[in-house]
Length: 227
Image 1: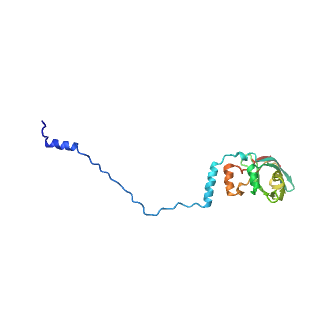
Image 2: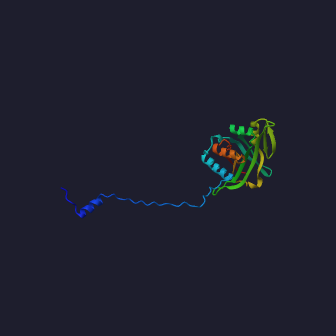
Image 3: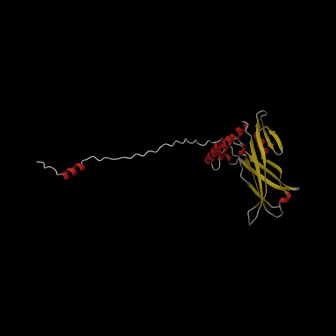
């Protein structure tokens, strides 16, 4: 026989068996009515700099194509009258990509650089002279001859080896005034040749930095003289 519940028991029983309601609060963010900002536009020069930076990041430390592309065979500095004259011979070689580019009308601009310093035992060497000379190598599809333009003038050659041999020949380059060198002092000299990649078109500049196929450069050839 069931006994009737007291009012307190009925209240506790109803509370324990009732469904609990859960209240959820939703927050909303109003959309901005301001017009959207446009992305900054990139000019052609900025795009080129971006591609150039990517090419620099991907370039090898020393491309295999550039190894021994130019070799200094010998270099001498001798007095003659009021000047010191430089004579040198450099062996210049081009790879297949450079030769094909030359045949397609791409001129190659070479720079020969010279430095002279007075040797000092207890301090940094003193710069005495810095000089450079250029040589522009081109191929004429009309005459089918290689053209070389230097400070001495313009010449044409039937074969590429002949033009490269002339490019690497330096004779009687009046590079240092006679009074610049003091008797009894030791002087350090340095000579090198390189292809001026900056004279190429921008796409080829990027290709040169990324692949090294357009790199032509010798190491610094160093020697000392004491008048």
